[in-house]
Each structure stands twice: as structure tokens, then as C-alpha cells.
Length: 116
Image (cartoon, rainbow, N blue to C red):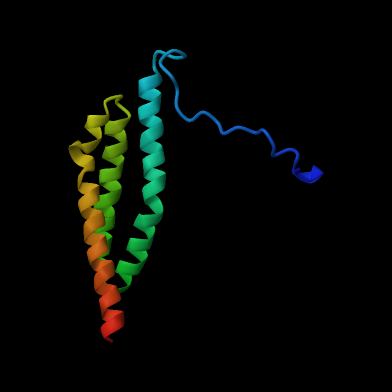
């Protein structure tokens, strides 16, 4: 039994994040925009941490990789929001290379801390 002060939480369902084709003819376009936005939000903490940690040892390299990532994420989202999910990877795929480079910078920073 829930205490009375938690009663407002009970039976509150999660919102529907994606549209269905039966409800809206533009559901696929809406869902693509929604997924592009959601994917960007999911990747943001990883990008920030890699930029901060890798940038301590390699600030210029991380600046360039960060700019590449941001520009490629813009095109990733623009391609995704066309309604065809395959369009997201035309230019957006370079963002993953930027993340790989940022991981390398972060690993280099970690190794330098361990080795002195």
C-alpha cells in the first residue's frame, strides 16, 4: 500500500513518444525527427565527458574533433528529419569518427596520468 502522499504517482502512465500510422499520416516523419532528437540527447553526455577529459591533454585536437562532431550531428539530424532514416549517415557518419578520436585523446590522457 502506498502512503497517501504518493497517491498522485500511482497509475500515471508514460507518455507516448512515437506516433502511429493509424493516427497520423505523417507519423513516419514525426518519428524520424523524434528519434534524431532522442539520439542527440543520448550522445551528449558521452561527447561532453570525452571533450573535457581529452581536452586537458590535447586541447587543439579535441577542439577540431569537437567541431567536426557538432557539424556532423547537425547533418545527422537534418538527414534523419527528412523521413528517410538512411539519410542520416551521409555526412553524419563522420561524427562517430570524431568520437573515436576523442576517445583516443581521453585514453592518452588517462595513460599519462597512470604513467606519470
